[in-house]
Image 1 (cartoon, helix red, strand yellow):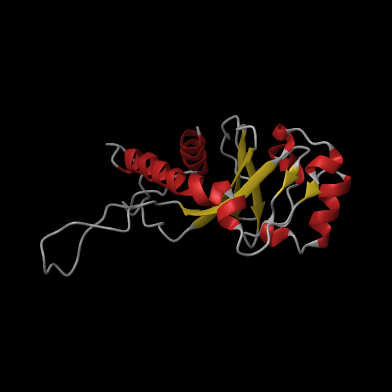
Image 2 (image 1 turned 135 degrees about the vertical axis):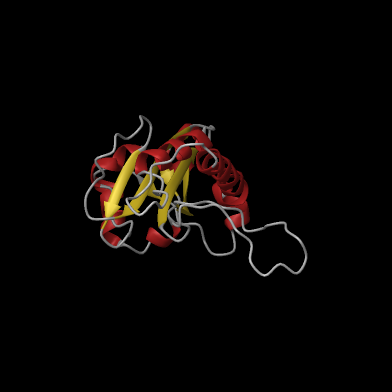
Length: 195
């Protein structure tokens, strides 16, 4: 397809979704042998999920991340430059509305979206994109984000969260519990981790 349509290398893109939580503690701890309970400092939102869509081009250009939150309305938080937000009442990635700037004219991999005819049609007509589906079993050769980027990205996200959780001051609820990270906090972590 690249040869047939004369795409430049910078017009070839790759994207992948990374599922994250508002709290990003490590899944390993160290304590005295035999201890039944280990206390981990969190805001209590290690199960509240959101999705980050990362995309890059074959020439190494990184595109701005897209964050998808399970909610009905866009947040009132100020969103940092270079980050795009999508919301859906069920947390689905069913369309990007105003976030279409995340992608540009290119050939993209969109494995699980490839069966969605509405998505394919929108890519082709509105965004002038061509979809290249990665067949099963070829992820290791054709999905660089999944193979080499997502793991370090998640590690950087943990480091950003750890700085936040260890900060000396946090807002608390009237009951005295630590408030969870704001959408602004999460956007900043994603931006810093992607850079």
